[in-house]
Image (cartoon, rainbow, N blue to C red; front, side, top):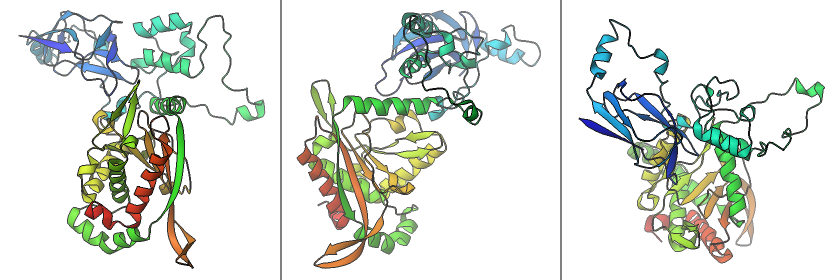
Length: 420
């Protein structure tokens, strides 16, 4: 029985990929789950496994071809020789060369990072992928200017794109220049040059793209955290006993944000060409710092959750992020982002938008300050809030209204419970 081999889902906003390399030839036996080929996108390199044990039949998409999601790549004849090859492995050598066996693929979010930090394009004995070779020829980039991130250091199309973005000459006529002046000889030996990880390169590119495309502006306010802190102190033990999770501040902030987004929908929208897409749901991204860089997992339908449910989901996503086990689905579809620089001691900052979103809220350190209240000076735990927004779609009045609504909900958290 023949099985179809098709292009899997490639991730949010990724609609096509390039065939990088087939690891099996037509007629070769394959095991269930064995890697058949690599697909290259502008974000990651994906390995396509065999859907069953059998023999690779017709190869429809050739190396270097551009294919869309769900496109037919080839056919697999089930049960034709694969079982025999597996059973013979203990008694005699398989006729297929050992070098054909692909290395195991990283799982989850490790696709972007694990193993890529040590990729060495110029030291690789593998030729560049066809799509990469074509782009290098078109742009006049040599192999020495690109570090490969594929198997055994193979240069992929994404590596060429990143090399061009980081300043590699795009014409043979250009003289290669260092990205920075050479260090004095007395300092050079005390420097260390480390290639940016793929995740860090992606972060850098996305943040710069957000600055270049959006009319970004930031508005500020401050919130008296007394009420939230007192409520947290009063109920934290009971809350943890009942729900099995600690009561933090993120649950309050997430719910305050979802209430404000419902009142000011422009902050929960995004621009697509000449259209504005209004999201009638709240998928809240929560920025999490990891040893590999900043990631933004998403609490989906946070507006439909209780504070306890939000805290549980944030706890799950945070642990997955730190363990490197976030899946692609965990980081897709966010409509608004919250970034908490206060955990690192930041008193004030202007967060950068997480494109294509139109708003991001920056939380900061809680600090006791003297405040004039009712004609008297009292000490209160205060926090600065910052809302960065895309002025192309969000007016100043809407941005200020949004931030004031967040402030009001936090200073009177009963409003969150009563949905006011």
